[in-house]
Amino acid sequence: HRVGAVRTGFVRPVKATFHSNETAALALKCGKNLRGTRYSKVYISPDRTREEREERKGLVSQLREKIRSDPGQYHYISYGTVCSRERGTTPSPRTPASTSQPSFSPSIPPSTPRTALDRASASNPCPASHRMGLAEQPRAPSPHPTS
Image (tube, rainbow, N blue to C red; front, side, top):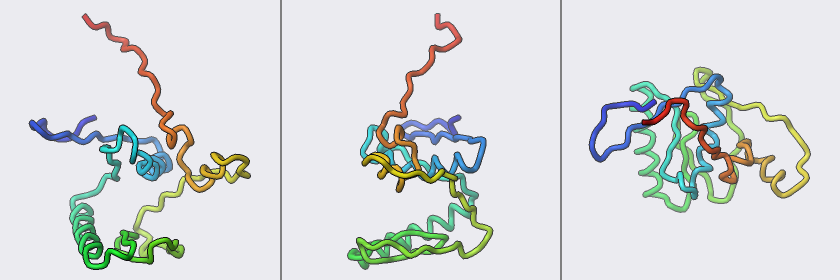
């Protein structure tokens, strides 16, 4: 359902509820696949408390400052801190600083990739139909007649 008051010139956010943490984590993880599609202006973010939003706002401002001051590095937010690394390198695995951080890791069964699509799928947990823009299903007709 939509959240917030109706205001001219503003789009109200939509709140989505999932039956499991794994599904919610998968939706958050697959949100990046909306880039470059007709949904490129859609953003998916977790529900945060007011304190978490303020903390995140501070981290994002620190991130923007780092990007301005050192554009040659790749900067990102990980486990509540702003991190940097050389572009083109992969970060070393890291565990959360505190156990109070939510740990979302959807369980995806391992399989042997056979095709190029399977190899791409091995590194991306999002369903292939979602990555390829095929997840759109036609809407069922409304059970309520329109008159």
